[in-house]
Image 1 (cartoon, helix red, strand yellow):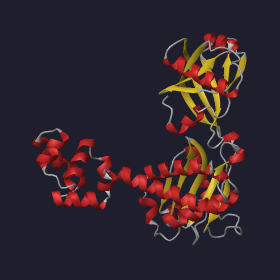
Image 2 (cartoon, helix red, strand yellow; image 1 turned 180 degrees about the horizontal axis):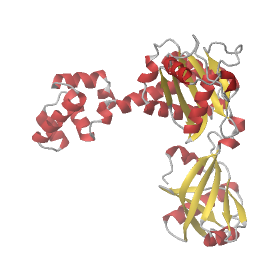
Image 3 (cartoon, helix red, strand yellow; image 1 turned 45 degrees about the vertical axis):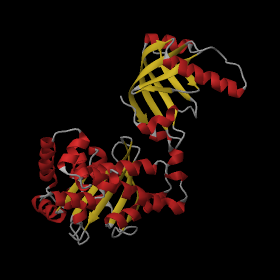
Image 4 (cartoon, rainbow, N blue to C red; image 1 turned 30 degrees about the vertical axis):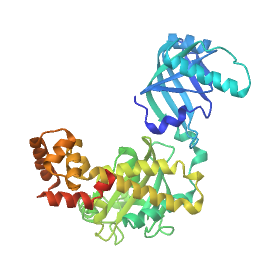
Length: 391
């Protein structure tokens, strides 16, 4: 498994870590480590100085578990690994040996033991230990700050934030905004709670439209008396929403929250015009922020949320724009050079391609971007700020 770049701080040696191994008979052993090194791509390594029992276990059972704390936010990570080999020489061995000797020299203490070998592991999976980050959980008012910013940026008016409960199905309300009857009507959040529970169960974005008419239809076909039903149906009232949207908030693939949004006016086109891929991206960015926001002063929380949401929107617009999503790398180069005022012949010379190839690229660019001419393409590039971006 390729390690994401955001995990690289784990391998800077700022905080100790531990390695859990097991013998063939299932007897565990925990070894404390001063550091884990990122070798390359999906490999990590540790220094074998006095790891006798650990090494014996790895020979019998190559599967092991590393537990490392990220020094940037103090969130713990579990990295499942498989023992691959031991190195006794080579560039990686010399690199780690030099690191150990340098620290020993700077500390003014002799080495406790010589480096015997470098133990190399292949990473098979990584997991963020959300359950061990209680000290990093946001204050309750933080969720309200987030809903306030979402309402302002996306014009969403009825909002609620839910977190997964400890049991398998339930969810807990942490904050709400603009929900009729909140704090007075015990059933004010019934529909939102069911929606949040559905998101937790299905682990995906949920959209509902024309809710009132569909509820009326369900009421009409269920003839069983209301008092005899195990789960009474939600009544249709003037506050019943016409549409709903709910999406998960994740941090490294772990569900940490659910945002629910309702519209009672029937005018909430913004909800259904937003693509699922953007909501997935937004949910991931908000999840990362929520796990580290406990270190941010209360007066700066809203500004940070606004920055995260705006950056997510800008990044999504860039990725969704046909210039980035449809054009090939070479076609983008041709388009930029057209906007710079170069002729086809000059572009061909600059990119080391034939004149005919440039013409073919231009025809495809016009079709993909739906622009009719060279002038229209130049205007498109200038209006999107692509010239500055690629300068």
